[in-house]
Image 1 (cartoon, rainbow over the protein chains, first blue to last red):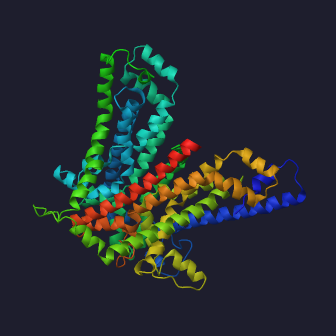
Image 2 (cartoon, helix red, strand yellow; image 1 turned 180 degrees about the horizontal axis):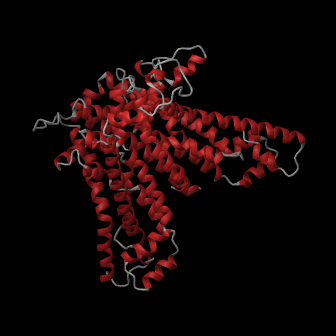
Image 3 (spheres, each protein chain N blue to C red; image 1 turned 90 degrees about the vertical axis):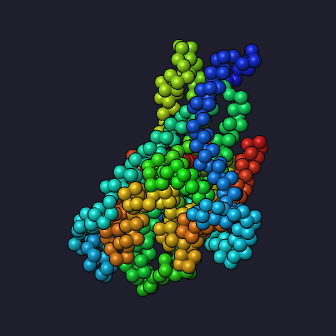
Length: 292
Length: 303
């Protein structure tokens, strides 16, 4: 794949031939883009139409559009598993987990950026080293710890092992250090203590970085699968990803319409939210890679 | 800031108060890491030396028995091979397709930001729901792929029920879900390549291919390196898609190291062997991360 398009166009004087070549390249570009969209979009479209098909249609000859659109799959899915409860559980564990991570990231980043402490660099390293330990390899010991605390099948059991945060602390520490020094100094001169400075100066000024960090945390918690799967053992404590997994296990193959309707319960809210915040998420991830 | 000034007197009361506040602000975060991240590492090592089924009160110390039994089992090496297959294909496809799409979306095409958003959207979806959707798509009689192959007069393989096709299915879903991440990172890298380099290459009479070879590729190499290491680490942690799509099967065909660890810990209840796998995984990931840090360090000092 070559990339002559914008460079050809950037040339001050274009020959007719170059312009024709540019147009051809651009057409190929649009075709490739459409193909990529199709590969991403078709599975989602397939899910969407299945949710509106009758069983007879799903298990009959293939159709690309629901012949007799029905809404029956949605109440059927809603009643096949306690989805209202799954939503509640997902909201509690996601918001709780995100709140904890944001709180820890903000306080830790403030301490690391602005406070004196002997061998602060070592403390920072100790925190960063946690990035090297994937949560997946800690599941057995953590399960035993949570069991000893009597927290199996509880919200705190789902939330607390993942509440500490290294990556977000790192991102926010960078953001805090980049804030204009004079404004913070002015607040200190006005007699604001550290907590006042944090709440009324640092947090408002670093808001974009905090929002980005919170969104990344939100997505991770909402989609978390392995830990909630292990630490919950009754249907009424399951989160949405675990719930849809069990729904597929009981209804899949024999009742795809209902399973796809249930999948849309998870996909639709995330897609709507994503429309509004995708810029923050995409830029946050790119920034972490290029600067980090 | 205050932290930059060396204290005139040994330690002022004000500085002492800062120490206290530092501990109060950072302490809870570090305490949680100690309990739920660092302690499990040590405990995994301990578990790898005992025989235990999670129930018996005593855990007899068996030295390297667990290691010996893991390393001498054919199943373990099959699982290592599965993990390598999954990692090499997933990372390779993601890096190559991601680069192609990023180069495409770096062109002045209309709606390219919308296309970037669409490509990225599976990244924010739950892996579990993505795998549920794809288990319908792979359905050999009623699924999307069967329909598409039917247009060509072909029959769908029994994707998830066949030892030959289950791993390709898992790789397809994994790449489908994570491709957008690579595209976004590559695009950030492409935008970081200075325009003057392209202008200079044009002045030197370099054609499109030469500009790609000598400007774009070298300019992207730090980003590509970052992406390959993070992608490899991510595939070692891939669990939800495998669990939902194939449950590690059929007959272990899609069991990777992380899935094996889960099975030993929560299906067959063999704490000792689970400890061994956790230690093995930790060592692999530590080595990968250290390679990445070494590289970053060099980039900082020479770049």
